[in-house]
Image (cartoon, rainbow, N blue to C red):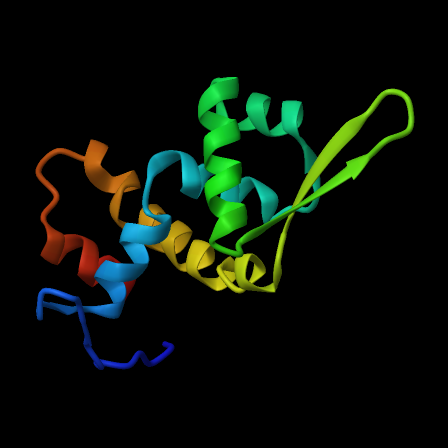
Length: 129
């Protein structure tokens, strides 16, 4: 399991931010996570992302702009007819791949069992050990 720094950053108001909380504030919206996850499989056009994420055009456009400004996503425009815009992850965006893998493992372990009535967390933990 990867180690993490327990170093806390301080806001302008003097409050300390945990790196986990700050990271989630940056990438934690439903649509940002959906786009970042979809782009893990490679470059995609706007309409492909719209279809795969279920986001409407306005939301997707805003999210792609935000992720671009934060350095997670690159935009490439091909001006041949028809004009096409392609989106891909930067090195920063690609570095999230192990995070998505861990979230998927967590979800498989803990969310799949929510439909099993009567099973406790202790039961689930014993079945994994």
